[in-house]
Image 1 (cartoon, rainbow, N blue to C red):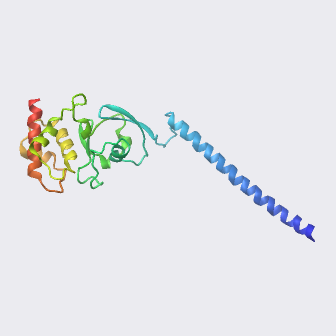
Image 2 (cartoon, rainbow, N blue to C red; image 1 turned 90 degrees about the vertical axis):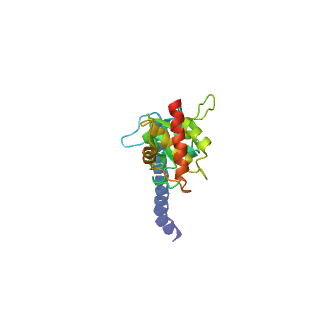
Image 3 (tube, helix red, strand yellow; image 1 turned 30 degrees about the vertical axis):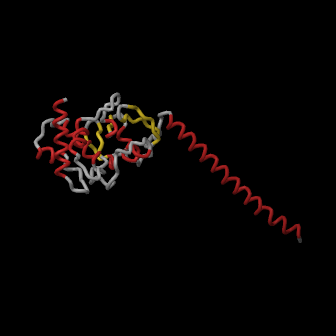
Length: 209
């Protein structure tokens, strides 16, 4: 009677064991495939439709090799992977301008600019405006210092970067023109008159060289 039970149970036991072995084997194959795929990607031979994660970004004149997820924004990478916290994240939805940086000399909201898009382009943050050798501030930065144009100054880096970019296209703006040129940046202290005065002072310094 017991022999009959054992003979009936044995196939079920073996079947279960084989099933578990199969699951383990499948997991091993999947892990190995993932490793091979990752290795291939690291060597720049990405599979069709894949996004390479280890990329090089030129930030403030230096090439930086960074592990970047496909969905990560430039603002997140600058602040939390490169430690460039001068780039502020305010609204995080491309409305306030606190995260403005220059990409190929053009102001962009870095909170809505995917980091992968910056490959092969020159990114400048507020940390990169001052002279690296002497520490001398840029013309716009000096204008801010001399005019004390901000209250809490959370929005200040964005305004400085937006103005720096705008002056590359119009180095001698009227007050109204500059106000329009940097109107994509918001100040929650609403001290726009002082901000504009500081930016105009910066434009004056830039013209004087």
